[in-house]
Amino acid sequence: MSNREIDKIDWDQLWKDELKRVNVARIDWDERERALEFERQYSRTDYRDKMLDRVQTDPDCSVLDVGCGPGNLAVPLAARARNVTALDKSKEMLRLGKEAAAARQITNINFIQLNWDDVVIWKDIQPHDVVICSRAFSNMNPRESLLKLHAAAKKTVYLTLSTANDNAKVFYRKFYQEIGKEYRTGPDYIYGYNLLYQMGIQAHVDFIDYTDSFRYEKAEVALQKMSFHLKVETREQKDKLMSFIMRNMEKNNGFKLDLKCRWALLWWQK
Image (cartoon, rainbow, N blue to C red):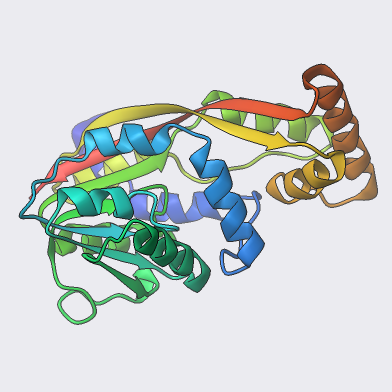
């Protein structure tokens, strides 16, 4: 395929077309228990530390954390920057972030409830030296969202996007086959990389490997959490999931599941 033919590919539209195939669970992060569960699960992984190792900041810089969640990156970054703006559409996630900052007596974080799709740069948000969007990319309008991240940064953008076939996705795909469903996720990082390239942005690519851990003491709790996580719907599917949970608990004296995950880190400088 020639460069001319590659240039004709509409990666923005391909991204949108792939989104139509997605059948993984949509999560309402304003539900308190969902937000708390995310924070508990996030705290069991080493993703945060590995991501923080990649982000370059200095004491005089400003940082914008897009889709900050409960402040897992924003709070520690506050110690490395002049100020941090932590933006999320979920008021429950922001509440957890504010509590984490208050517990550490951190005062240089500004938590703002906004949907990135609705943000207008220079009106709602001023440009920051460093912009981070970690596992929170608003991909319904990928080109527009990428352009907005670029416009919001004075120096550097750090963006993480999923990869196609890490061990976690292999597990989910096999499990979905067992319960009679097809596992379909959204576009992976190569769509984002190619779209950025077409936009004139040549991003660096790195990978963050980490372990996503699930721990539950009771089978009923494991069934409730995993049913939502795996989008289990029918009675037969729940029975198969419970059978898997019971086998797991007998083997591990409690539910224990560790999944090796890989996310792509795309970063570029202005």
